[in-house]
Length: 251
Picture 1 (spheres, helix red, strand yellow):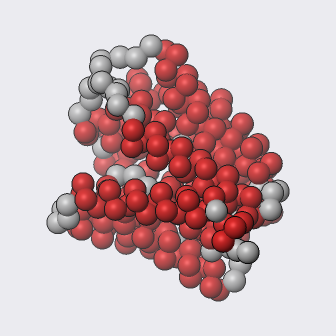
Picture 2 (cartoon, one colour):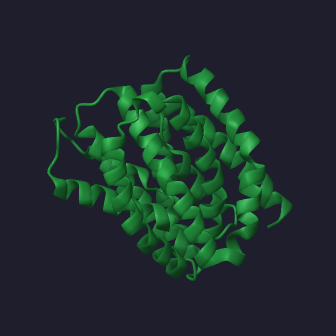
């Protein structure tokens, strides 16, 4: 890792944590593609964001502990535990590809994620059939292990439930907290040497993540979140499109 790469990573993690606090999502959706463009491998990008995310969801779960629906969280976490290793194995496989090909794969997955979040029309209800739980959390575990973007399937599952905003946030924080240590352990086991320094730098950048989160909370209270969310979605769409077209743009 060069000094330029680390400075870029610091800025990316700061901005991503700020946006996460403003609109409630987008940390890894924004950070992972930009880290790839900064010269990091996919495994390094995933590892670099894992420790800051672990700290962030730990704080969120503690603050919302009285509202966490543990009865729903534990089965969802169990499903993600089963599918998370599949995602890590896919990461190990994809990480051996040429960097440009990896950017294209991440760009394609990012477009799919944005499509799910933008166009899914779901009528909230009290409970879903268990098959939807398996699909949502199984897919979430795979995506978490492969590209550190396990949130979108969970968001769609939550959109189908008539829950309060506090309960929804508490569920997501607790679910992500239970998965984060397992993800870190699997990454270390499968890609130890390559991701060791990324873990260390991610740990060192935690103060920036905390600062970005605090800034995001303040800005979120003053800004029009709807317009900001639309602008970020457009930015993410352009990032995904550029990633897909990267072989042609580099000619």
